[in-house]
Each structure stands twice: as structure tokens, then as C-alpha cells.
Length: 396
Image (cartoon, rainbow, N blue to C red; front, side):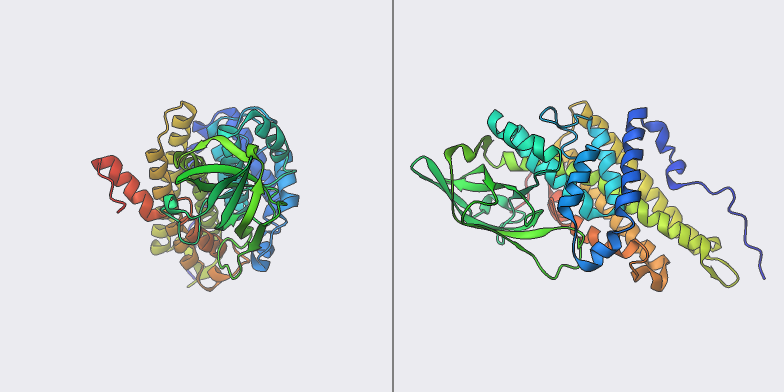
């Protein structure tokens, strides 16, 4: 029997890039705190949630609020006010557990809470943000429609004046947190121009229905919202949320979290593949000792490390106030595609076991198929980068 080579000198994928040396103490503290929460509260249960297509969203929201990660990068109103790098690292650790958990946090903090924080009135902020930061109130973000995805400007949802009130009509789809939300940030056209509205979900005429038959992001709440002559008071309008640039600004915030989150999903797949390759023996030795396996592991590790470096660089740009939407597109374009490839390689390396929920790989692989599409499809981010390089928009 051939003697397996010693793996006593093996290092972790993050050690290969000396990632810890790039982080301040407070960043490591945030990362470690969120990782412990994921280890204790999410990883033991998430495969079951995924298989059942269910999530204890309200319970988790309160726990995540207690952890301080909901709207953690926002200032005031009970929010933690951390820097962007800390928020990114929290997203990384949450998505390493599951993309659905990071989506819950991203939609709450970077879409719903950010919209209220950036475009709302003082009264709207005071009413909603403290409770949302604690996880007592859940928010969702209604932009995408059945016929308006990559082209949100073609939305059909409308808001019209009725005396001093507003009346909203329309449908939104693929809305994370939709059926558990207390407030929906809904984008609608007022005389042809997009505006944001805060819609309490107990409003007459508002209905949220779960979207069935999902094979991805199953540990996540996804809904269709119907607004059937929903009457709102005049102060439901977000006073700063006029024009398509407002919801797009929210999307840039959420995409930033995805840049980090995708690295977490890829790292989890790589770590599972490394552990499996070290333990799985074929032909008298661990498969980690075969050249083809080592090539796959090396390529996966470099993809994860490069994505981590890119995310940290963008985090530092954001903390310095110099991050552009085009740079966020670069991050999502690169890191999600790289993470999806890592997940596919890991699934193949695990062989038949790669399709079992006893391992995290197939769950991450199917989740990443959704991440590849939402918050701007891969093709749309391709065109954003292309326009940045050429100065010529090619969306039509």
C-alpha cells in the first residue's frame, strides 16, 4: 500500500493569503462574533430549513438584531454605526452559513432600512429604524415586478393622489422577507416618475403570497406582493426617494454585501472540499494526494483568496467614501461567478456525496445560482463595466 504523504504542514485557505494581517482588531472581532453566531445558531439547523423550504425568520431577526448586525453600517436610530468593512465581513460569515441568512440581513439593512435612512423623513426614521435594528420589525423592498426586472424603469406599479392620500396599485415579485415583513418599501410611478413609499403590511389591499417550488434560497422567505388600491396617508411618501436613482442607490448598498457574502459561500465550499479530500481514500491514499485533486483545490483556494482581497479593497474604498457603483459591479461580477465555479468544483470533488445536504456544497451551489441573478444579473453587471470602459451604454 502506498504511503500517504504527511499533511502536517497544511495551512488554511485564508492563511495562504495572510488575510488576518489585513484586518484591524475590530474587524477580526466582528468576524469572529458573527462566525460564532453562525456556528451555534445557523449551521446546526440550516440544512433542515433548506430541505423544508422554511425559515424561522422572525425569531432569527430578533437574534440578529441582538447581535447588532441589522443596519449595522447605518448611523443613529439604534443602529451600530460600524464601518463598511465590518459590515462586509459580517455578510461574509453569514453567507458562509447560508445565502438565505445573509439575504435576510441585506434586505433588512441595506435595502429597507437604508431606503428609510437615506430617503425618509425624521418621523419615518424614528418610527421604523429602531425597531428594525432590534429585529422587532422586519422590512422588505418592492422593486422587481413580473415584467420589470433588469429594467426597473418599466415598472407598472402606480401611485395616484386621492385627496390628501395616495392609492397604490401593482404587483411586485421575488421579494425577500415579503410574507414576514411589517413594512414594505414599495417603488411606484407617480405621473411617470419613480417614487418610494412606506407601506405597512397590514394595510387593506396589501397581500403577500409565498413563491412556491423554489430549488434555490430555500432557507429564505420569498414572496409576491399585490397592491390592490392600497390607500396610504400623504406622509407615506419617502420625501427623498424621487427618481430611479433612489432605488438603484439602495441596490448598490445590497450588492456591496454580496461582494463579501459570495466569498463566504465559496470559502465554505472550499473548506468542505479540503476536509473531504483529506478523509476520502481511494486507491490506498487520500484523494487529496492526487495531482488532479490538488490542482482543483489550488484553483479554488486562489479564487477564494482573490475574491477576498477584492472585497477588502472595495470595503476600504467605501470606508474612504470613494467607492463607485461601477466598482461594486466589478465586485459582484467577479466574486459571484468565482464562487459559483468554486461550488461546482467542490460538488464534483465530493462525487455522489456532493449532492447530499449532509455537506453544505450543493446547498451553496444552488443558492449561488440565485445570487448570480439577483441584485443585477451577471449580464447587467457586464454592461455596467462595459459602459464604464467605453462610455457607451449598451442596454438596448
